Amino acid sequence: MYKFPEEFDPAIFVGRTLEMVCINANQVYFHFNDHLMICAESAFWYERQDKSHSDVQVPLDQLEVLQLLEHDVARAQIKKGDVLIVIFDNGASLRFDPVLGYESYRVVVAGKETFI
Image (cartoon, rainbow, N blue to C red):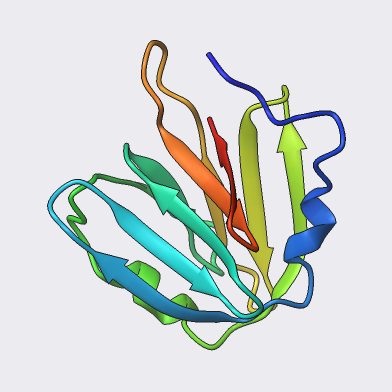
């Protein structure tokens, strides 16, 4: 499976605002300001401020993630080279893990795509 390139810095997310969440039958798009986007094509984790969490299915099976709209990213990190965790200023977070054998999500920075 694919991993992030060595030069990819997850700090690119810090300070960005989640402006829009778009949904279709097979994907969930998280659009941040300044041409930054995450496209989930498989399940991902959403952790609420109270630290309870849920596995969110694609197509989107719950709308709680919309509570992240207009919140800024406080921190972001990559684990094991292919797990992206984005933590917001309200304490909630999104975690994108790859599914073995599939392109599970992608990150687009100013038009350049990284598939994981």
